[in-house]
Amino acid sequence: MLNKKYIAAVLISLCCAALPLFAEKIIFSANRMTGQAGNTNTTTNLSGNAYIKTETMEIQADDVELSGDNYRYIKATGHITGKNLKTNMEFTCDSLEYDRTTKLASLKGNVNLEDKDNEVKAKAQIIDYNQDTEIAILQVQINLTQKDNVCSGSYAVYYKNDQLLEISGNAQVKQDDDVFRAQHITLDMDTQDITLGGNVKGTVTDTKDPEPEAVEEPEMPKPEDQPEFKDEGPKDGE
Image (tube, rainbow, N blue to C red; front, top):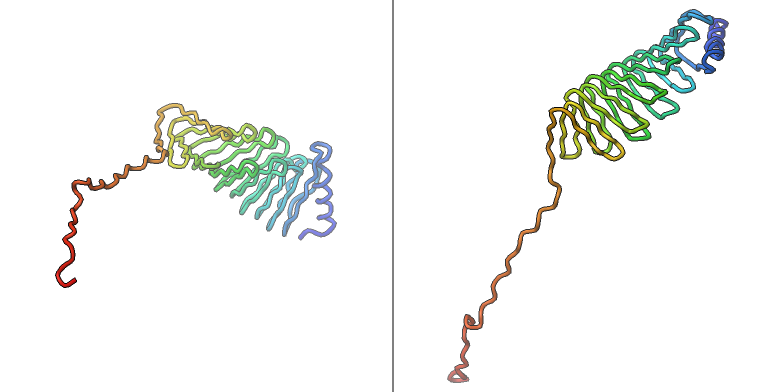
């Protein structure tokens, strides 16, 4: 078991050692911590309700490993939830690898990524996300929703800044009752314009209201067709 002096040393190392290279402070907490503290080539493991916060990323998981020079690499496993603090992107997944230098995050296993600012929700088995360019690459069992769009395919690239989505591999976009299929589909999420390429297919539903059926008015009887009523005068006894 780690004593208080050792924990304090690791805390100081985590919070201060990264400053010369990254100018970034790491805040963490966990039920248990093991590893070695130092300025280079260190590895520290956090177990049980592990929590990591940098200036740009916040991660919660069952277990977290910090490694590399000045804790450059962060690996997390088990019930992962996280947030990009600058771009308002939130995610959940089974495992995560994050490089604090390149700002690249690799999310794997039942990945859910949500762009809160643009109301975009994405699901896939693998998502690689670049914090600097704000580009996400989605692979395997892709499903992305935005407004009335439901998009699927084998591979996709989501450009957050440009609000552009490129899909390939059995690509499909559904807009309400309309369905578009092609080898490659590009969707402009601002204008809702769709570009299809390769083996294009689609189904479009006419949304115009049907014209009302004419209602025939009943014919009025002609004067000559009216029954005649004769005044026969008063009857006997009246």
